[in-house]
Image 1 (cartoon, rainbow, N blue to C red):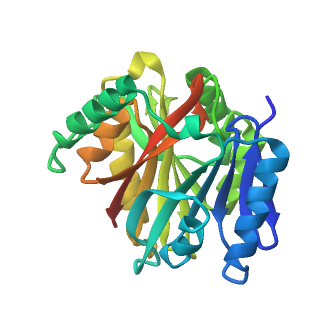
Image 2 (cartoon, rainbow, N blue to C red):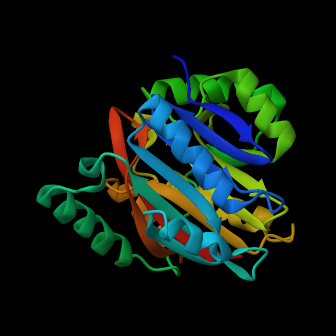
Length: 280
């Protein structure tokens, strides 16, 4: 499978490609002119025929994007360095991509309602014969294999051991739950030290081990692991249709902050994603 590519426009980082059918402005560099960056991603989307442009930027840039037809899909307080809000914005080149059916709206509303029923005081412990560990380079072959078993499609090449190694050596910490020595659930904490935030992501549990709160336990382990690193804000981008993952974040004290409509190719198709956040 050919994944969407990550590259630079001037000094700013984007991801784009046919899988997600979008341009994603992942990080705007402070030296870059926001108007020129917007014009560049719009031109790229037009050239490639993409149907959405998605941007994650500090709130101080939001007026430029809103003035160019973007809409605010989520707002995370204190996202950058614990002092500046972060905006998740979308521009829908194809207007139909920005719409949700009544069935989708009802489902997403039900998922959120169930998620809010959780309590941050809930506790869960590992059953006997299970252990939770931070994973190292020697574990990455097993991690890649688990991801291949759980996901048919994913927006980043987590099935590739070399990609996992590159991210581990950069800014991503991987965690796993072992059962009788074998990895049965994994997750990752993608740390932005410059922005003092962390994305809790890449959760996957083998089907036969679901229902044991392993993602919830992994999330709490990751939160405790980054608390001493100067990280101020944790967030996630979770599938809007997933009762399990949204409830995991809801009962862990995360707050819902918005839905990215028809944003990410994961599972079998392009899906809407929910943003949750929590102060560290």
